[in-house]
Length: 160
Image 1 (tube, rainbow, N blue to C red):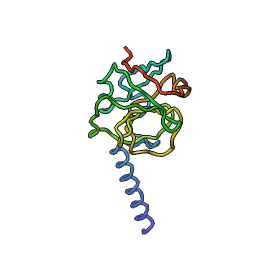
Image 2: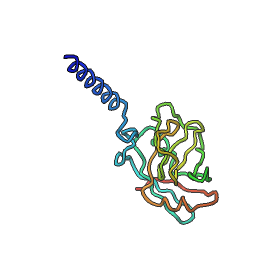
Image 3: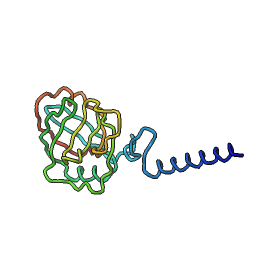
Image 4: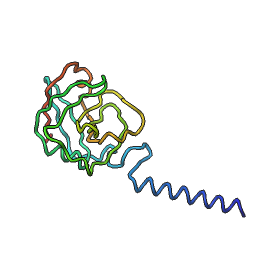
């Protein structure tokens, strides 16, 4: 009888944990559900030095704010040998922005503490980083970001 009660309690705990995970938008790979591949709003083209990078933008409030700024030019620089970063022309509202992503190559993000935007061209980590707000993911052209050694000006625009 005691074994049966323990099994029922364990099952109840597992159901509660599963409900929590589903309710909080966390998938099995520890990324928010909205950031899963395929849940994109539109594409953005990043043009610099006769190169093009195509980015699939996620469907979330932070991405919508970035898209509202386009078309625009941004001055990018290298940071830590892993990412290209830039500042926004004006601060974005990050109050409703969902935070948390794994910093892997090709991910576009806002770094919440500084309020700037970046794209990882190398993997930076393998665990969830709550200071990152996901914006999108590079579809093609990541090699151009990797090979760009100096600061550069890029035009970002919506792909029609």
